[in-house]
Amino acid sequence: MLIVQKYGGTSVGDLDKIANVAKKVAKTKKEGNSIIVVVSAMSGETNKLIGYAKHFSKIPAKREMDMLLSSGERVTASLLSIALQEMGINAVAMTGRQAGIVTNSSHTTARIEAIETKYMQKEIDSGKVIVVAGFQGVSEDGIVTTLGRGGSDLSAVAIAGALNADVCEIYSDVDGIYTTDPRIEPKAKKLDMISYDEMLELASLGAKVLQNRSVELAKKLNVKLYAKSTFDENSTGTLITEEENIMEKPIVSGIALDKNQARVSIMGVVDRPGIAGEIFEALAKGDINVDMIIQTTGHNSQTNMDFTVPENELEETKSVMDKLSNDYSSVEYDKAVVKVSIVGVGMKSHSGVASTAFKTLANENINIMMISTSEIKISMIVEDKYSELVVKALHSAYELDK
Ligand code: ADP
Ligand code: ASP
Ligand code: MG
Image 1: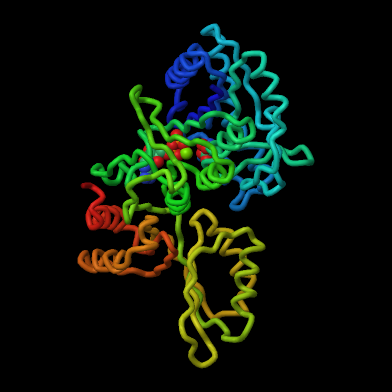
Image 2: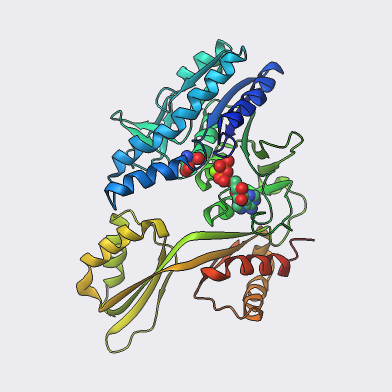
């Protein structure tokens, strides 16, 4: 079998843990498999590097950030390869570029355009274990890029797809996908299977156990994707697969929490045709990901607009809003908010899912600031001090602990 295994930050968090991963990889190799390992930086390392950059600049240049952040994954890839060699395993470490991962030039959120598989194929054919530094590639003009936070998952899925691997296993500190983050709700239950679409929603809505774009790509390339635990030998994990492969479809599959949210409220916006277009175009040009938007009914040719952005894009948002100051009378920023979401394919055919959520929050006396829905999800913005309470209350309201 050709197996791609990805080990996240906590799995390679220190030298002993890297040694543990080396043992697992060696075992898989000795069982007669071909194996490509993708590694993250040691846990906390990427944040540490971002902190260093912020010491010098509020909004550091993205090209330089990629140069900086890609270094974390190179450290773990080379160390794991050295550890494997010491165990008598023929291993080779590769950067994203050496592995042939070509991306566009959107620094810090680059998209993979192609994988030149010949470099990895050659090493596989000669029986080597490849250890690829995750989260990174190279643009057409030869400059290092990174794939967005959590992007080593994407590296792994893309490699598995390009090389037609039999399976792609994402190893972390949890035994698979749970009905909600088990760190918040210990009563959360592990799912044996989940559909690509539900997993994509959960990941996009804050369940960082898998990076959302990796799930999207796994669906597109039909990669057999597992989430498993590094630390539990008997981990059966969760299979992420097509909806039709799942026999019993629950109405609600999981609850996600996204703390990386901020609310922007613009008051006294000049109420004229084209104004929303101007504001949101300026934000889009600043690479800011606007999510929920609410506009209130206008009064005296003025209106109010509320929208959410990722909290880590707030500095950029402020700088765009400052330039638009002629279009409104005042603006407020609120970082003390979170987004809680309910996800399930069964919502397509069941009514009453939303009203259960609203009633549950009402019973707890919690105010909902914003709501958005799609076919398979309901999202609500609430004050951050209620995060855990809301997650637990909804988890029990939909009987996910049963
Ligand atoms: P890694 O560093 O290995 O990439 P992550 O920290 O990115 O691992 O992802 C694993 C974490 O995801 C878990 O420790 C858990 O707290 C969190 N998590 C959030 N939502 C879920 C969920 N629904 N199921 C399992 N884990 C979840
Ligand atoms: N090290 C990067 C991050 O922390 C990528 C990853 O871990 O997947 O986001
Ligand atoms: Mg991760």
